[in-house]
Structure formats: C-alpha cells, structure tokens
Amino acid sequence: MDERSRLGRGLKEISQIYLSDAARDETRRTGSHHAQSGQHTIIRVCHPGSSVVQSFFLANLALELARNQFPVFVWDCIDSSSSGIESLMESLVLEHKETDAATVRLYGLPDILIYSQLSHDARKLVDLVSVVRSSDNDCYLLVNADGSLDSLIHDSMDAEHVLMSRIDEKSLLQCYAHIRVIQAKGNLCRIYIVFDGIENGKAARDTFDRFSSFIERKLQITIHYLGYLSHDEYLQRSVNEAKPLMLFHDRSETKDNMAAISKNLIHSRQNNLNNS
Amino acid sequence: MSRILKPVSLQGLEYVHQICAQYFMEEHGMKIAEYNLGNTFTGKIDLLATNDESVFLVTINKEDFAGALLRSFMGLRWFRENLDFLMRVYPPEDIDLSLPVRLIILTREFPPEIHSILDEVCSVPVQLYRYELLGSADDPDIYIQGMGASRSGEQPVKQDLDELRKEIGIEDAGLSDEEILEFQAAMKP
Image (cartoon, rainbow over all chains, first blue to last red; front, side, top):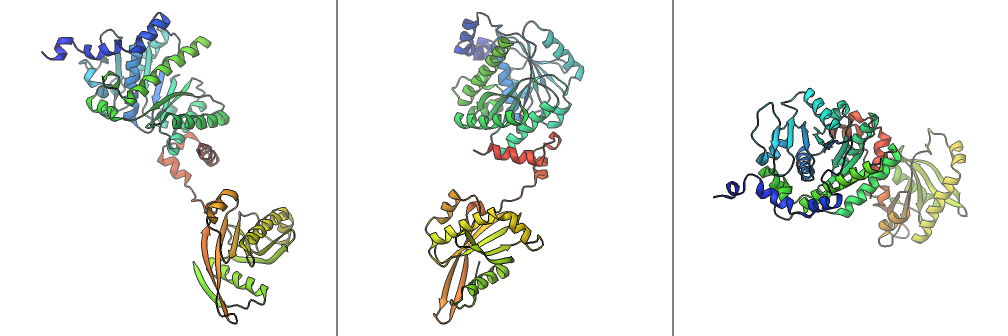
C-alpha cells in the first residue's frame, strides 16, 4: 500500500504543518486561530520582474494563511498556464469544473479557492470582494496581479500591496514606479516590500533602508519591509513538482524565508489593526 | 595618445606654453582662450582652454609634481572666486565658462597611485599628461603622452532614459528624468 492511500490525500503533508512550532505558538499566544479581523484583507501581490516567483510566493503565502486558519480566495490574473497559481499548486488541487474554483483542500485547514481571470468574469471578482469585506471569518483575497503598470493603473480594487523586487537598480525603479502609481491613484493602503533573489539579509535590509528613505522623502509614504526570499534548489523543485515549498519536509533556506515573510505579514496586519 | 612636437627652446617659458597649446589644439581639438591667467600668489592658470563641452585649466609643470598640483588647485580656486569677473571679460562665443571644469596637469613624472589619490580627494576631474624632453640640450624635442584621467574625470555615459522607461515598462508612471536620476543616486550604496 503506498503512502497516499494509507494516509489519505494530503495527510502526510499536513502532519508536518501541525507539528510545526509556528502554528502551535500562534494558537497558544492568541487562544484562538482567528486572531485578526478587519476590512483590509485584500492583498494584491505583484512582482514586475518574475511572474513565476510571484506565483510561487502567493501560493505559499496562501498556504501559510490557511495554516493560520484563514479561508483564502485567490484571484489569478496571470494568463500563462505555466506560471498560474493553479498550475503551481497542481498536485494539491481537487478536480474541478471549468466554471468552478480550483480547490486546494488540506485536512484540518480552510480550503483555498482559486479563481482564474481567464475563466471567470469581473462580476465574480466583485462577488469575492463583497464576501471578503462582509466576512466575520477573516477571509483573505489574494490577487495574483499580472505585473504590468497598466493593469495597476486600471485596477479599481482598494487593496493592500505586496510588491516584490530584486535589488538591482532597474528592478527597484520598477518597484518605485508602481508605488508612484499607487500614490497617484490615492490608494492609501499599506505597501509591503519583499526582496527576491538575494542571499544576504543585511544587504536586503540596507537596500530597504535606502529605498524606504527615498520613498518617504519623495512621496511622503511609509512602506513596510516583510523580508527577503533567497533562491535555493527547493524553489525550483517546488515549481517543477507543482507543490508549494511549505509542504516540503526538507529544511530549506527559501522555506525559512517564506515562513518569516508570512509571519511578518500576519503580525504586521495584526499590529496595524490593534493600533487602529 | 602621444606626439613628438617640433624642437623647443627651453630658454623662453612662453614658447613652451605655446607648444603645449598647439598640442591640445591639434590633438584634442581644444580652443585656447587665454595664456597665463592670474598670478603665482593667488592662483595661476597656464592655459585656459575649452572643447565646447568642458573648460580646461591647464598647468604645465616646470618644478616638482607637488608644486604643480598645488598650483593647479590654487588656479582652480582663483578661477572659481573670479568667475563672475571672468564671464564678463570673456564672451561666451570665445569660451563658455559655465561649462564643467576639468584640470589638466602636464608634468615629467608622477608619484605612484596618483590616479587613485586624485579619485579620493578631488571633486573635479583631473587629466594627466607626461611630457619628456628628447634630443640634445641645444636641440630638444618635446614629447607629450596622455596618462588618463582620475575616475571622476571619466565622462559619464549619457543614459537614454526613454529607452530605460520602455525597457522596464514604466512609461505610464510619469517619472521625470530628474526623478529617475535622483532615484538612481539615492540607491547607490
């Protein structure tokens, strides 16, 4: 009998999630999995330089949010079949009909529902926004943006932003241009920064200090640092196997980075809500 | 870049200046606006030249290098302090004194690591030329060789910012040239 039929689908993967420190600490600390509430649970994720890394990030973020018992909707604007969220989580997605959401179901966790912009019209997105806004259950809507400035300009959603960038000058300038457009649209929601493809936390932090100082001086906007994502061999393996990195058993630097970023995002939002 | 010039009489200092001026005009396309500007007490410039992109303050070393360096720096200070006066004296069609300033020093020899030393201490680009006197004492030739410039003296490659905007897809962000340049400067470690 192979492991899958013996344990049930996903049980092997989920067993390690329940055994991880983060989930137990969160439960112990708050006394509840539903630690947050608030209206701004729509997060637009954008990496102008790499749709694959962006989707990889969002898929793992969705899993981490689910691990913290938040129901997650994903609106996928990436029209490439290879770098879409569904294809990166293919090994976990239940069979679904064209008009339904692709469902990621792991035992003991809320479902992750993935809607592709290709197969669902804008009304569905409006419905999802409405569900998330009116939810008492702290749903998250993660939008996998297409990365172009044009789509940001025409996007009317009032969302928080996670902007990913490499730390070379051109990538940072792209990131700055996105922040400039967000400001011009009058969207005053939080902007989080994740640096990608960097192995050194100090270099990432130094870059953020320079970047955020400039933004603050020039645009009078405060941006927030979530962390950095290194690229180890498990990232590529995760993409190739269509299985989110957070479900791998092996220790991985990228996995540690991803866990830290997710934790920072959850705690940052929680602190923000507590202060407001 | 080097050139053997015609025989030079070392008896007349003015004549040396003219020979060097000839070198800069013929080899580098410069225009000489003035010879022997200022004075040795407050600052003196042996040649005031331009190529329509920069103003060159040329010092021709006849003593030790340290003395030439000091004289060049004093010449720069004098030039800056008297710029308003000089702009009234020299019409823009002769020399545009608002152009970026560069120093040129001609000397027989340099201390080691001079380029990196100049990189460290100078805010103004400094171009160095070595000259040698060849031939006999009665019939010398002067030989001038360009030795490069301090790093701050390298002409920056002009960026095509429209091309950059297009390349990274930020045309619609409305970033001005000044804003991009300011951003680039702020991001340097």
